[in-house]
Every structure is written in structure tokens, then in C-alpha cells.
Length: 621
Image 1 (cartoon, rainbow, N blue to C red):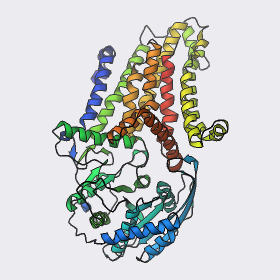
Image 2 (cartoon, helix red, strand yellow; image 1 turned 180 degrees about the horizontal axis):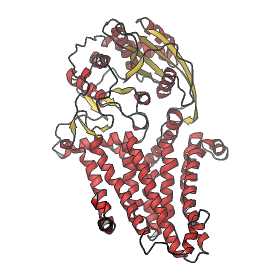
Image 3 (cartoon, rainbow, N blue to C red; image 1 turned 45 degrees about the vertical axis):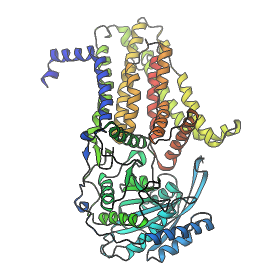
């Protein structure tokens, strides 16, 4: 504290930071990237362990043996689904009732803001069917959920059948201390959202649904099943939820523990675990797995039905069956026993899962990176913005720049042109962001009338047009100060003040984003920090304008699309990548309207306007 309170020492420290500002910023940026990439190196990670005492042992005897019956049920379910042309509601109700469950249905409807061309739907109507197995040994104040989406075609028939087989088996057991809800939802996430809103008596997305006639206790945890083949070679655990939320790490540890016990091949991000961490191939594999998790978390969408449960503080994950034609095979009985063991362990909980981590990255299922390990990587990037802001602040207070005449003091009045020079770019940039957020959906009908495009194409192209139009708004409002005597001095002062404001604004935005969704905040920091920290009006306009555009939020999304396709070993051409980019934009807008994803409004209302402020600085005259 003496270093900061002593004026002479503080002056020396400030002089050192300003003199070495650029080298320090470069070192911090490189250190942040190296730190992040080093997180995939196994000696720098922690081994996963079970924190919850009630789930600390897998010594339970799983006796589920109806795997073959489940496969025959899958064929029966598929036949009735084909006959009904969709979800066979009546057959499901009878099937659940015959297994001793209290069965209820819920109808729902949702009109999308524009057609979803990926799934070819606009006006969605459907029915959820769920059965409740009441706990025989408890006051029925808590519940667990097992859900299986009813998907079009032959998809997920085996999951629904296994759910029914588990319901029949669980009905004959007497050790349940929690109600168990077996949910078959239609139209994937939309049906899940309708059921969750009905269960918790909320309506945050404008969904129309019938009230639930049957309820259980407070939901403690949920598992979503996705099985689309009679032959399963491995089980993939999906954790990423809405807005980058993750379930408690103990849920992933529980899945991994039972996979190890039963000899089931398990993956994360579709990748098997390797033991040769000390080789280049082993490190690359772990880095690719971690990067896949970062990209999926950053997009803010729910990668399974489980993602919507997380919003209601319900720990949930999706178990996805993979048929990759490996020599190793897992039958339905083994999968049923794995789910039985997980549900029995969750049944032992006396309180919600809370003792393990909620913020983590997984380079493999046996190793994890905690928040205390990965946040310094972001901190090293964010501190660059603060160092540059400190440098500008010192220059503003320097004698060469300090205002000393009455003419300059007049320019600082609220109605003066000097203040307007700073406020005008800020206000107009944010108005452009508001237009980017509101107009694409509201102008789709007008665009369809005047151009040969579909509604979805109209929304996406309107968003791109508004985004591009913002580049034509370098608001050189300093022309209003031409009448001032010290015009050159004032303009320099105002440019410095605008950049100082923009740097602090961006630092706050990225910091708040990283606290909620580290992956999104880190990716934005990697692309935005270098150019925003170094931009000045004195640089070559054409070259740095090109660099700024290539490091803008839209191009960041485009890069992420290509990187993701490379990581999943499905590379695409430039034209295919562009089409995927357009699809990502439309899905981002839809996810915000349907489920409340915050990524699109964050980018449109805050990140893009902040980037426009730096764009104005580059073209400052």
C-alpha cells in the first residue's frame, strides 16, 4: 500500500507502466494464449473425483435385464409412430398405464418468429406424455426425471422403448425415496420447454400450453436419453446447456464411474479418452476435446433436452448412444443397468448436487480444469484493456494535454460540441445495435414482398445488411468544433477520451460475459483485444480497416464454424462454411426467441456497438 500512497513511488510506477505498456501488453496476450492451450496438458489438470458423499460408491447391484424387451418395444413404438404420422399419444398413455404409472398429457403450440428451415417447421403443435412413479418410502417432496424425445422418423425409438422398460422395472422396486417422472416429449426442445414451464408455472417464452394435471415433488436431477440404433458402440455424455450453463461436475463423475464399473465405452465430445498424455498425439487429442467443449459452450445453445433443465437449477445431462461401427458393442441391457445405477445413486441424495464444480472444462472424462485454472488465461487478456486505459488516462492528465484555458473549459459543458463529439458515436453505435436486434425479424414480411427470398433468408440477410451498414457510420462529429480556437488540441483530447471509454466498456463487457460463459468471453477477447488495444486514427486506414473487419464479431463466428467442423473431422468448403454461417445466425435468433438464449442480444446490443466505437476511432479525422 505504501507504493500506491507515496506520490513519488506512484509516479515512478505509473511512468514504468506507460513506458513499457506495449511490451507488457504483448507479453500478456501471448501468455494468455499459452496458458489456455496448456490447460489440455494432463499434469496441469485435476483428476475427477466424487465430492458428494451420497454418491461416493458405485457398490450397488444393478439387476435390470429387459434389454431385449426394450428392443422389441422400439419396433412396436416405431410401427405405431408411422401409423399415427407422429407421436403415438394414445399408445404411449396405455403403455405407461399398463406399467403402473400415473399418466398425464400436455398439449402445446408455438408459432416461430420465422420458419426453421433446418427442421422444416413454422407453426408447432404437439403433445407431451409423462408418467409418474410415486415414491413408496418418502413424502413425495422430491423427484427425478428421465426423458426421451420423440423425434421424427426412426430417430430415438430405442430411447423411448428403454424408458418404458425402465419404468416397468422401477415399478417393482421398493427402495425409491423420490418420485420418478418418465417424460416423452414431442418436438425436442420446444416440447421440453413447454413441459418445464407448465411444471414450474412460468411462461417466459410466449409458449401456449395446457396446464399440467399431475405433478411430483421438486425436481433434483434429470437424464435425457438419445438412442437411435439397436447396436451401440459407445455412450457420449452431453453437458452443454443454454447460455453455456453446465451441470454439477458430480453428475459427469457419476456417469463415468458407472461406465468404468460396467465396462461401457464412454466419450466426451464424441472422442475417446487416451492415456498417452505425454506424447504430442495425446496432447493434441485432449486439446481438441477441450476446444470442442469451448466452442459448443460459447454458442449458447442447448445441445440436448437437458440444457433447458439447467435454467431451473436442475442438474441434468444427456446420454447419447453412438454407433460408430467399432468392434466393441454395448447391448441395451447394459445401458439400462448403467441408467439404473445412476438413478439409484441420485435417489440417495439428501440435497441438491452442490459440492462439486459448476464451472469447468473437460479435456477428458477423467480430468477436468476448474475455474481457478482457466480464468487466469482470460485475465491476462482482459488486463491488456486496463493497461491501455491506464496509459490513456495518464496521458489525459499529463501537462502537455491538461486543459489550462477558458476556451477548453467551455468545450466540456454538456451542451458543447466537444462532449457531443464523444457522445454521438456512442449513441449512434448503440442505436445501430438496437436496429440489428429488432429489425431482422420485424422486416421479414417487407423483405419477402420485395425480394425473391424466403422468410428465413430475409431475416438473415437483413441482419447482415444492418451489420454491414454500420461500417458506413464513422461519425466524424468533431466538425462541430471547427469554430474553437484550439481545434486540434480538443480533437486529440476527445479521441483519447472516446478510446478510454470504449476500452473500459469492452473490459466490463468481456468480464461480465466470462463470468457467465467463460468460453464466449475468451473467444471474443482473443479476437477483439489485439485490435482494440492498438487502434488509433494515425494508422493506415485501409490496412487497419481490413484487419478490424477480419477480427469483428461476425468473422469470429465464421472462424468458429470452420474450426468446429475441423475438430469434428468434417471439414467443409468455403461455400459450405458460408451456408453453415448463415444457419448459425438464424438458429441464434431462433434460440433467443424460443428458449431465451442470450448470445444474440449480447452480440447485437453490446459487443457490436462497442466494436463500432473503435471503428469510429480508426476513422477519426
